[in-house]
Image 1 (cartoon, rainbow, N blue to C red):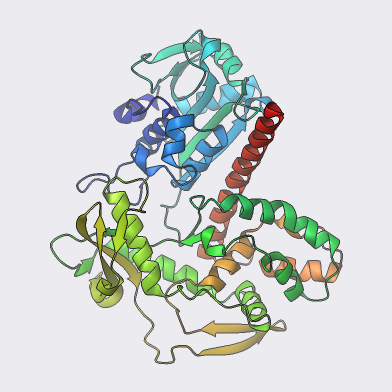
Image 2: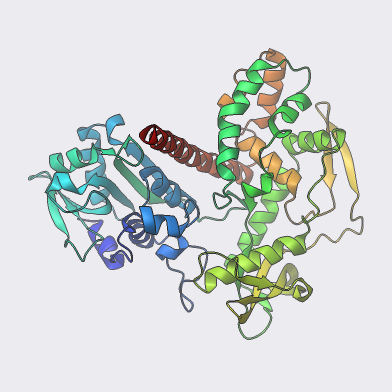
Length: 476
């Protein structure tokens, strides 16, 4: 029962009849003290169901519930580490070992997805955390988040396994269980994959399914041709799928004059990751390809435009809105000021935007690293490394651009993407360029984070495709 006390201190009732998956995650994430990266109410940083919308719109969850793969995707997206198992790909003995491990720990928690009917309960699919294990009786304690229906209750483990080892009719796949833990390193990433733009499904399918086939079927003489094949026919703008993260917060008592130590460390980390990325061969290859093929960055790629969009999204979130379509932003009001960070002045910049949310005016501050002091804006130096121009960009040096998004996406693609390239020398060269082993530690963590996200996103994408096929067959 070691994990019980952490879970019960954050235990709550699901806010909507179909929110069992979201509420279960909220309970577990708060029990693990995972930082949501923003305030809930007042000064408190605390997970709430309304924050868990990165993998599925809340309106869809409210109407249809959420699938097993998207719950695991949400947990990972929220900053936790996840080990997810489908029952048909696991065993009762493995499940029992995870139940015992998590029940004996305060920092490992188990979430189960099961069919209520097998437990002789009303309803069908449900999510809840496991709060304890009785080894002698081989029973698990279910902390049912639908507390208006059932209080916490003990279930024979073999019966719970049977309820897990059932098929979710919405996806045609088995239910299962997942162990959720807090990351060893506090979550602080510069990049993330986004599923909010509906075009993510097309991007996911193209990158993970179509690209390996294209690379297999074509002959290449240069690695630039490989990059053109991968990125030359993207079904959507890369910025709709890969986002860079901006830290925003409501302005309180006028402009920010000082950022705290944690904020300073996060800014330094993001600056370091961007600097490391721009020293990779992957970025140099993307830059060379874009220049040779006259690929231009979007006109709205400026820092002010990006900050304005981030402040609009932040304003909607702070007001408890699920979307920011009703948020009006005034570009003329984007203001910039240096702030003191950790005792030194000018290490960070605050960019403030004045916005209207549901008719109420609000000022949102965004924290970004200090601008480079070089006066050579728009210029750059070119170095040669392994036959590829290493381009050191001065312009936009303190925030990511399309080149950076493409480069980090190139590094995060699965190694299997390149396996079918016919020419062995081209295969070896591109494999060296995208190898994660030689990346600096911070950038390696960043790329691995995107790779993990891509794994969960691809599973979700596959599930949705199967669901759509099943619906078509049913109609026919």
